[in-house]
Image 1: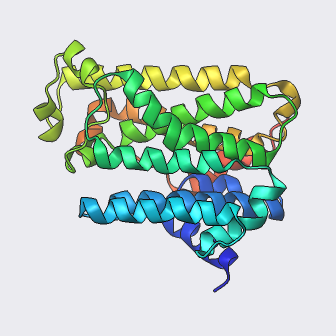
Image 2: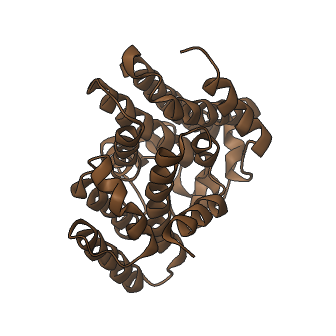
Amino acid sequence: MTPKQYCQQKTVKSGSSFYYSFMFLPQQKRDAITALYAFCREVDDVVDECTELKVAQVKLAWWKEEITNLYQGKPIHPVTRALQTVIHTYHLSEEHFHEIIDGMEMDLNFNRYQDFKQLQLYCYRVASVVGILSAQIFGFNNRKTLKFAHDLGIAFQLTNIIRDVGEDARRNRIYIPLEDLATFKVTEDDLLLSRESDAVKKLLEYQIERAEGFYDRALQALPEEDRQRQRTGLMMAAIYRTLLREIKVDGAEKVLNSRTSLGALRKLWLAFRVCFKKL
């Protein structure tokens, strides 16, 4: 299996909504973004699949060394081998890859976030940085486009957090800031024990409103001259924002006991609409 095939398989297997937007890219950019996404999946899987803390720490330390190897021109892993050309073609920063790993390490060290400032650092590392790297691959002229990528990354991660509240709670993880729980008079046990209530609904609707704010800021920040190049990001936004709104319509508190998702055909349709919409 070639490095390119490995990354493709990793991306398809993940079932991510991002895959549907990648399909509309030219081949070179599609290969580049697929390699980047495969890297994100690899380091994320370390946290999700390793039950032993020390093992996960060792594996993430290995990935840090492997990124150094990549930038020294001697990568070992299929994903970093696939990234070898990508990092030079699109001028991707080594520091950004290390920041993504730092974000994954936060999952090893924290299972609660006191306030949104602390959570936002996590979202920046695991999502905004990926957005910035993606924007570089898609291409831009105006540096304001990086603000678009930053805020869109936060919006995506907040959407994931809202969607996965119940699933994360069953793993003893609460990403919603404890400060917000206190404001809405929701206890940790309410989430850990999947208690649907009006208070939980209001708490989650507040999180949805915050995420919507980041979508709005992202779209407002995107310069007109770069909208065509950043079309893939706009496709992702259409899919994720639709998911967020469906969660609210279905009853936000329901995410404690069920997972809201969009079907493959609907994701493809949303991406298709953005792709062929006159921007």
